[in-house]
Image 1 (cartoon, rainbow, N blue to C red):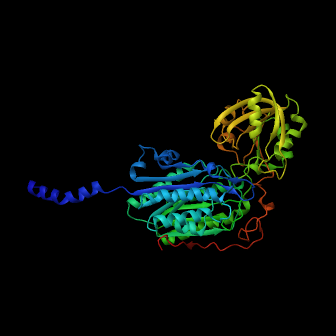
Image 2 (image 1 turned 180 degrees about the vertical axis):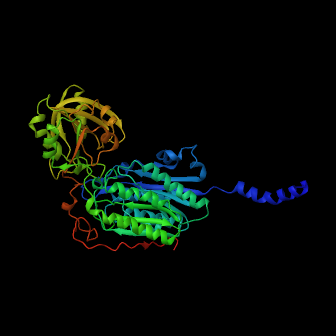
Image 3 (image 1 turned 135 degrees about the vertical axis):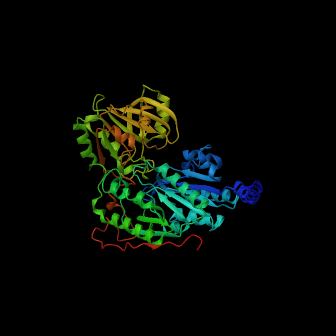
Length: 516
C-alpha cells in the first residue's frame, strides 16, 4: 500500500480513535440498606444499628471494588450510603427516614447517573410502613429519574414486591444458604450493570415475575440439603442461557406479617419466550417439591435436645437455640432457654458436662463483671430487657472467666461460669458464628461437651466442627414453628399454612420496564 493511501486512512480514522479514547466512563451510584426484621419480635432497630458507611468508605464493603480492581476502573463511582444491621425487630420510622433522606440528599449532589447499584437484603420491616425497599427505590427514582439503570442485589430470604421489581432493571439474589456466595452475588449485580451499559444494550426488555405462595423458614430451605440443593442448582444454568441476563428464586422471609412475604421467581433478559418459559419452569420446580422441605438438622424440644446431648459420646454437640436467633430477627435477649439449662441438675456442679452458651445481653452485669475482675465472683441479672414474653431476666451467680472489649456488635463481652455452664454475656446482642468468637474469650468450642448457640442452621465454621447437632424448637420472635405465629396480613392461601390449597397460577407476569 502506498504511503499516501496509508496516511489518508489514518486521517480518516483519527476522529473515531480519539472519540474512543475520550469516551467518558459511565457514572454509577451505590446505595442500600440491609436488615432482616421480624414483626413478631418486640425489639426495635435504630439508626446506629446499621453501622452506615458514607461516600468512599462504602468501597470497603466490597472486596471486588478495591482501588486497583478491574470493576473499580470500569466506571466513575458515586457511593452514597450503605448500611447493614444485624437482623432484629422492625426499624423505627425515624431511623428509616433519616437514612433514606441522607441517601437521597447524597444522590442529588452528583446527578445524572447512567446506573445505580442497589444493595439491599429485602426483608426490612419499618414501623407503620409496608414494603420499605419498594418505598426506598421509588423515592430513589424520583431523584435519579426513570432512565437510569438500577441493578438490585438481594438475600434469597428477601421479599420482592411488584414495585421493587418494576423499578429494578436488573435483579439478582444469593443462590446459597448459608450465604457463602453473598459477595459473589453483589459482584454479579455490579458486573451485569456495567455489561448492559458498556454494550449499549441498556435495560433488559423483559422481566418475568411469578409469585409462589410458599412461606418457609430458612432452616427448612438450606441449599446444603435436598430439595433446596437441587432446586437452586437450576438457577445458574438458567441464567447462562443466551437471551437471559439473570434468574433468581427468593424463598422470602417467614417472620414478617406483610402481603409481600412469600416466595418469588424472577427472570430478566431480552428473549421474551426464554424469559417467561424459564421463570415458569423454576416456579413449577419450586412448587412441585414444596412437601419435601424439612429442617436442615434433626429437631426436638429443648428438653429432648439436652437429653440427647448429655447422653451422647460425640463432642462438641451443638444445639441451635433457634427461636431467638439474632441473625434471623430475634431480639437475642430471650432467657427461656438459658433458664431451662441452668435448672438442669447435670450442670449444677463445676465438674459437670461443659456447656458453652452464646449468648445473652446483660449490660448491667457487664459493669459488675468489670468491677469484680477476672477470677472473682459476680452475680446479677441478664436478658429479657426487650423480649420477656417467655421468661423473666435470669439471675447469674458465678465466676468471671474473661472480659473482652472492642467487638463491633457486642462492644463488651464477658464469660460467667455458673456450675459447668460458661455463659457469654454481652453489652449489646451479638451472633456467634465463628470459632474466633469463642476463642478470643478464652473458650474452646472444639473441646466443649455441648455448645448452645442462638442460631438456626449452623454457619460454615460451626457446621464443620460439630460432632453432632440438633435444632431446638424454642420460643421467640423467629419461632421455627411458623404455623403457630399469628399471621393476619399475608396473602392466603399460603403453603404450609394452608396445606390443602389448590395448585396456584404459576404463569409468568411481565413487569413493566421502569421507564414505562
